[in-house]
Image 1: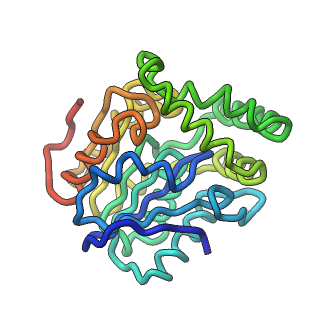
Image 2: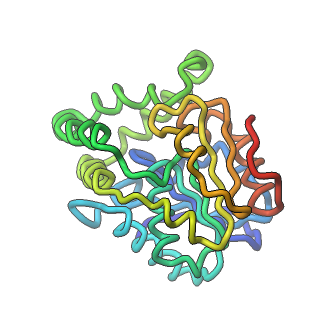
Length: 260
């Protein structure tokens, strides 16, 4: 069973999945701003935080099944699922396999597109660096995930993101990196899912092509999208705004596309 923590006693269950080289602590800045109507289930994904590695190649499907074990253990039958980056890939796999359990899923600075060949090659080259020196891999990559125009005011958050990544196990990072290389295109999930779909993107996101992600969303009334003036890490860069959007969209309704 994956490690998890529960925060709040609301009637709406919201399962939170962190991204690559993160753990359940990444939601700390957002939690004070999330509605008291939520009961937050924060999960450490396989190989991160206090959860062990479950496979040599941790595909989105494998990790979705591990998340399902947690939600089954908690008796969750109708809940909201939100995933940051890699957590978004897992959310898509979960929505594809177990749509009847979800009220909504949120792609939080994530995408439904598979990696193109250039991105896959970058990930493959990264495997060697991860094996040799995880700390160097973290130092080279993490700062680029934040809005380059605000590095000065985000210095403490960049440091926190690095320190969080340092705690990741090498085996967990390798297994997840391999899994992301194999990730399938899941645009069909957005076309077929009947619950609410929320997409939050960053204008300065260097890890996800936000413009492509937003532009190619199916034109359906159940899909809502927002573009924020930040990088890849809205939970650290714009926690209050991100939480406000989640509160409004998962508990109420707003027009389809809004740029902040």
